[in-house]
Each structure stands twice: as C-alpha cells, then as structure tokens.
Length: 225
Image 1 (cartoon, one colour):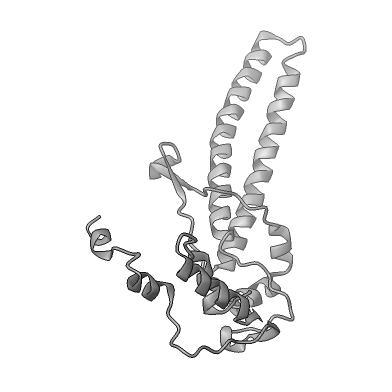
Image 2 (cartoon, helix red, strand yellow):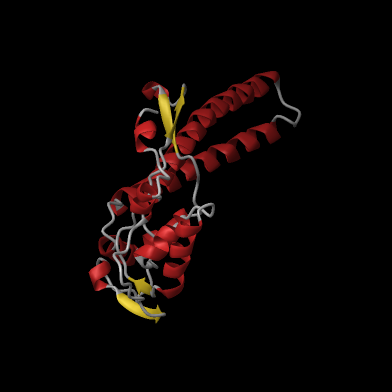
C-alpha cells in the first residue's frame, strides 16, 4: 500500500480557475515530502452489491448472482489452505475459507454428475441413429427425455452453485508479499522519502478553509439541494 502526505493528497481537489489556490497547492506539492509506506491490513474497499435475478432458482423465487466474475484458482486455494488461512488472518479479512472449500467440493461433485448425464444422453442419441425395433426406439426416446429433464435441473443447480462459490470466494484477499509487515500503518516500514518538508511562517489552511475564505463555496445553497 502506498500513502502520501495530506497536502499531496488534497492537490487533486485544486480548481485551476483561482490563482491563489493553485499557487499554494503547487507550492505544497513541490516541497512537501512524499513517504512511500508498506504494510498489510484489511483494505477499505467498497463492496459490490450482488445482483438478484427474479424467477427460477427453485422455491427461493430468486437467485443471487455476482455482478462480475474473478479468475480464481480454487484448486490452488484448496491445495494451499494453510497459506490462504494465514493470509486471511493477517489481513483481518472476514472471508470464510471453510465455506469456500465446501462449495468448491460440491461444485466438483455436481459438475462430474452433469458430465456423466451428458455422456449418457449422447450415447442414447447415437443409438437412435441405428436401425431399431419400434419398442426399443420408444424406450430410448423415453430415456433421452428423462436425461434431458434431469440435465436441465442439474445445470441450473450448477449455475447457482457457481455463482454462490464466486460470491464467497471474492471475499478472499490477495496474498501479500512475505516481506510486507503485518499490522496497521503503525507497523509500516518507510521505503523511501522524497524531498523535505517545507516550513511556513503562517498557519497552513486546507482547501475547505481556503474555499470559505475566498468565498468559493456556497454551503447554504448546497444544503438545500
């Protein structure tokens, strides 16, 4: 994680139309030191709300689906369970690794069953291409129909299970580098400092105070919107 000084962070809010504000901001940007910090902690992220699809999905009446899908190596997670669990603790994450692995096992079993039924359906379809007695052909037709209905149900279950697995697994944080200190910013290590802090002969004002002093903001009107 990289952080920088307060004044550098506030430079993005500069309004170039006003020279006094721009000049002060550029001075701060030029002379305030930048500190590059490295530490491992739970990132402050904005959660992406899952999408709820109405209809289908059995008695529940709706299926929760992720708005995006990540390329997650579930096999690696399963084979390196201890490493992933340690990283989750170090990053103070609420991810539930046990649930992810349980869902992954269910996914593998269901996928295997779907593939088995597909193979049976293809075998029945190939048999029906041969010369057959009417009774045997009808039996194959009935078997193919049953296989098709079973496949439709299982494939829908597989889609829902895949979405559920994605939603749970997306909460697992990326693995941090072993050299990254564990903890909050107090445990961080300064990698590099650029420049030196400039000293001023007057109190430093932030953009909010500058905007008020220069009558750039109309908070009364903004509060009415």
